[in-house]
Amino acid sequence: MSLGDDVREALYDLRAQALTLMADVGRIERAGAPVLDLTTGVSAGTRTTVHEGQCRLKMPTAAESERVFGDEQFTATRFLAIFPHDVYGVHIDDTLRLLSTADGDAAGFEYRILTIPAGTDLVVKAFGCEAVA
Image 1 (cartoon, helix red, strand yellow):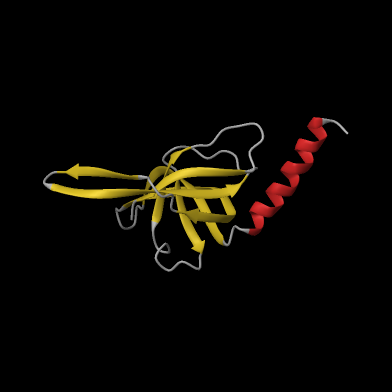
Image 2 (image 1 turned 60 degrees about the horizontal axis):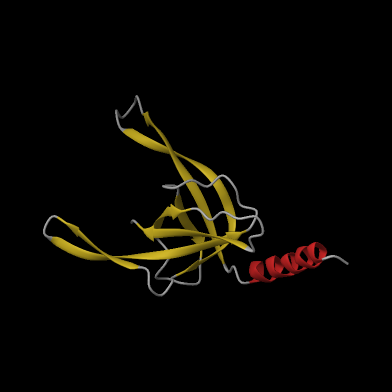
């Protein structure tokens, strides 16, 4: 057995184990062009689903930054949205919505994707994001 075979076998086991820890269900969406409703005259944005499935929202420890808007200062907290390794096509500024989660504090928010992981032998894809609504 070669080293490459050992790595592939270990990756398979690690990926399967990581999937068991993903207790949430999330949907990553991309904003589309606004569509005008001719009846109401109201323009509404469309969304395309990029991926929907198991995930885990995790708050890393040292990922807060101070922001100032006008006269107000607040702290923005970064999160990690952890998805299986085979999730592709996600872009910066896509949004994550948790469809199912045991964390009542995380539900109801929309999270903007800020960073995209890249690598050959990833166990999971950990997208950096922050709550926006």
